[in-house]
Image (cartoon, rainbow, N blue to C red):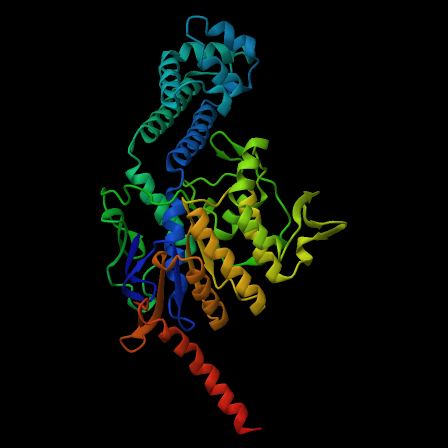
Length: 470
């Protein structure tokens, strides 16, 4: 796997290999997090794209159907038996329920487009005399010639809404436009609308993602928007899911339980409304808070698959997790501690452990860890490095991480050699170019001493300063 970034954030032109474990080091404000944000945005935007599209189209269609119903004004307010009697000459299979009760998602059987087609056909059959007769039976003389004209206009607008909705939900069958909208929205929220270099946003930018020699993603970006016209932006997603972990304190938030349904989450994350796109933090919370639907058999498989890794985590964090009344607890023997009271370092192990227990990490997962060692004592940094290495070796998970720690870097270096996964590891160091306005990612697989030299430089500087005053 390889990602190429051209003029993205402050990255001018760099290629990064993603074949197992990829480690990025460098100073602050050198674009280390940018690759992770891009990768998360790409993968999450198209994960279950077809299911997301179906869910979004249903939500959109339901709203448009209700708009059309409201355009007819007074009809839905009348007692149903009046309308039923007046519509005897019309097929009321779809129309009658639409006029009286509206429509719910579960009422739509079969293909959504076919339902709207039937609704349009049956609505077109109703003449103005029928509509005005219904009104006059209830309120004598209420509808004069002018009101009948208004009713004709209402009917015309209702039909226009339905026909436009039908056109929208039956177009873009290959999801070319939808994928572009999804990726655009995901990149925009992760980068707060600033995907391109802020000081040089007139540059053309590009994101490419390859699997072997196959081009999976191809995004041209201008004015912080994908400008691929009708060209496909992706053809084959290399991962099924991606999790971006940079904040262990998400476990402190109250637990809102999410339940999966047939067409997506109960919490609406529609791409038709870009304000509903969730951040990587909220996506992770959705997963951690979701009801588990694993059978006993599936749970047994997960336990067996991750046994060795969980044993390593249990050496640090041996308990389990439970949720009661919106609070998450860590349970270990007779101790039941709210996770908000766990140490920050324990929370990082907790997140990995919970993802494993839910079966969310496998060989189709990209795990992005942004400075995961920040809250870890060197002893726990070593343990976390071993867990990461085993996730790559035993599960086949792909991991991208950034680090500022010489100890953590050395631990990764040591465990990759112990578990013989050097061929699955790539190391990069960021470096400023062109008067510091841009950075590039330099592969240091053959010169990893450069990473340690950089760390030692600043340690030596403060040691010399200390020695000066001793």
